[in-house]
Length: 209
Image (cartoon, rainbow, N blue to C red):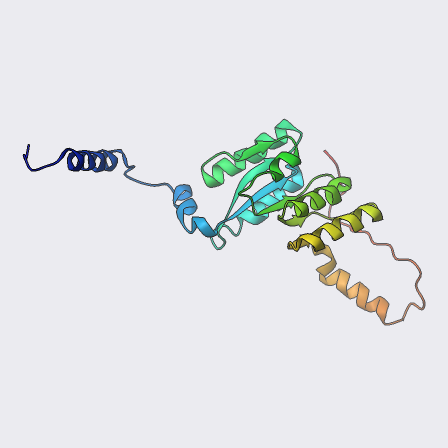
């Protein structure tokens, strides 16, 4: 041993060598994706992990994972099966488990969460959106936004006060067939209209699991 090498220098050299040996030889895609722009990454929680939460919200988001710096980090659903299924998707996509909660209130207490996707039951949308706004979180909320007018006003007021960004899933209103029907009604060709009804047909009957 070099007699001029101090104890502190020896410890620093040994620590560096140990770290180099312990470092992984290769890094998987999920780890690399999490490492890029970590400070700017949008951290998203999902409230409601049923069919819409998983197959519309989560899969819809993941289509843009290569172009957008985001990560799904938290899930909330009172049904354990739904939580486990959603977490399986997160683990496959991002290489780690999401934080899982039975109550949305616990999810909204996370300090490092930026936004939430709300895909809970229809009658809970306004309550969950209002709570998200009061927690300072941006939100995408499934349609319908409300089933009771008072709840709607309360949720909208909370969003306005918080100044958060919210989008409501009303994509069908932008379909060419819907826009065309609206424009046709506006022409007055049908005279004065007092009521509108809308239905959708598909190649097969609707059914429920």
